[in-house]
Amino acid sequence: MISSFEDLIHKSERVTVYWPHLIWILFVLLLHIQEWWLLYELKGFQPWRLPTFLFVIAYPINLFVLARMLFPFALKGKVIDLKLFYFTNWRKIFLIFTLSAMLSIAFNIFILEFGLDTQILQILLASTFLFISIQRVEREWIHKSLAVIVLTIFIVSIIIEWDVWLIG
Image (cartoon, rainbow, N blue to C red):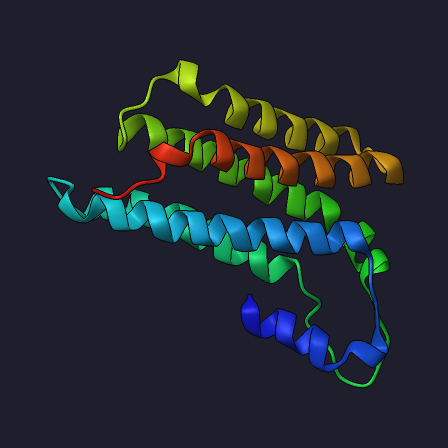
């Protein structure tokens, strides 16, 4: 993800920036950082078996796929219009976001043993991404608003749960 972002910076003279797309890139980067943080906390998790490990790594693999989907493949010799790229690929990206939220819910319930009642925000996010994808909502103001709202919720939740983000 970082190398793909660096590619866009390096070729910035050929990149037409679309700020909501950049917000999604930042959001996925923050999700990666959050996942690294949470996985460290599992250092004492017992028992580790192959099915448990495969389940645990499903979310980071999904994040990798999501991060890769946020960047155009071919950056050689042409203008890169991130708005065009976003509106060509947003449904696939939102469906992967939906899968990410569902994997996060399952991880929180089965590995961290959180109750379903603590997963309301993730359920709401998964439902929103799925609804917008299925309904093929292409109004730009909705996409812009959703990008800002999701990033804001993520940052506010970290601030509110500041003490939860401690590794003992």
